[in-house]
Length: 406
Image (tube, rainbow, N blue to C red; front, top):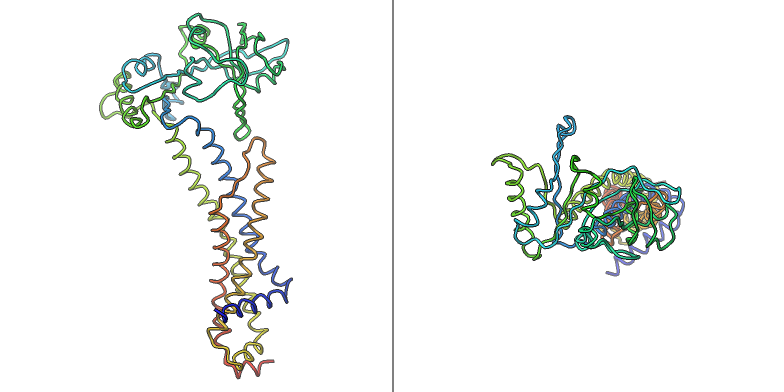
């Protein structure tokens, strides 16, 4: 242990005596580590933001939506969820609690006191806030009597309020959707942006009112969110829904589904896999620069061995073993790489934070502890690996020849 401490002290002294050269040597590792950390921090921050968006939905929430291929879009024959499919969810599948249909309403836009905006207009039912775990900041949400009575009421997002310059609490204000007048009965909590796309520029109206606005001749775009009564039966409910919808849509055995049933937690797991793969690929590509930095360390260490040939001869003459010389030079290489890695981690996180701040709506950068540990460890490992050749050369020098070296 004493010999290791002495080797560490000697390695540190050698690096400090050539500060500028040590800094330039470790610059490649520094830049490589900073690049890796910056890329990983951005990917991890985006991943965390997406998971937060679905965290409140819970594992029992599922979504039924239509699936379309490129051929469907080319021919214009799109698969769509129908009102009959909604009835199947409500009345023919056991184990389902709430069902919230969501229908996109085509409208000319929204206007208020001469100001206009183009929000997403969606029609839904009172179960929406329970299924989506979304609640009003002011006022109330749509209730069942609004739907039954075809009341022209709306719940809006914060961005629509700002675009139309409504009061901070817009409850009670009247505005137009297309040519129809609606009364604001609630404003939902702010959800923020994802990659510059606002999640608060919308108006929700009663489902029956939406159907009336679309007209019976229209073929609306529907999505259905629903919850399982028992969390332990989510997979069973999902399979029952698939079987029932296949029968409802007259899909023959052996034919592929033209719809999908996805759970919120399944989406998060799938996104985790995608984010993990992206992190590994991008980190691997950028990490190539670490190898370049390792080659730089090897070159400088070889030069250092040549410069310190007489010093190595003196050490061996005083009793230093081959192992002592090997350990000292490996420690020097490892310390150089570790120093660059630690500085690179700090600069990389700063760069990731700055880039995230410059992109409108991009979530804050995040660096998990395991990434920091892995980056520091890998940097030191690169230094040791590329320091083996110089260390072996130093350890293998003949002491007599080394003392004669000029």
